[in-house]
Amino acid sequence: MENPPSGNSSETQMPRGRRPRRRPLAELGDLDMRIARDGTWYYRGSPINRIPLVKLFASVLRRETDGSYWLVTPAERGRVTVEDAPFLAVALDIEGQGRGQRLIFRTNLDEIVTAGPDHPLRVETAADGTPAPYILVRPALEARLERPVFYELAELGQEEEIAGERLFGVWSGGRFFALGDPGEES
Image (cartoon, rainbow, N blue to C red; front, top):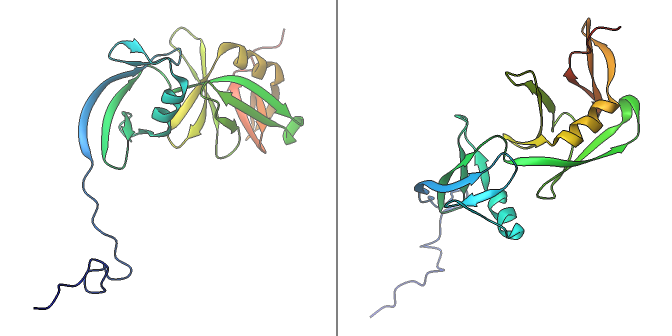
């Protein structure tokens, strides 16, 4: 009787250039996990106080085109609630000045992001007129600038004429980012 070929034989290997089929991700639905506006992560209503665990969850956080947030691993995915932005920009370092300056932000989870073409800054205005500034950290995932960081950023602001329009903003990574209306001069 002949032995069947081993699992490593050429007969059972995948043809070159073809990948094995991936199993579909197990859809877990809502995970009862929430990222609060202040950056605190909660699971089943209790704060997750272990920062390494929060960083692990943050490393698999994704945002869908419909605006929903998901923790996605190779085997499963589950939806999480994000009250505002998943991260906070808690510190700002400045290298250089003027058009050549680089604005380097640190998030509450110690990610470092330099504002520029790949990590744009944007400012929305809330219904009450309060500015809400954000920086893109990873594709579709932003950090909201904490108020002291935004004030520090605003101190660096200058008026520029861009495409015939007078704007107030900052330069970083060779790009100008509008921070808001320069207002009327007194």
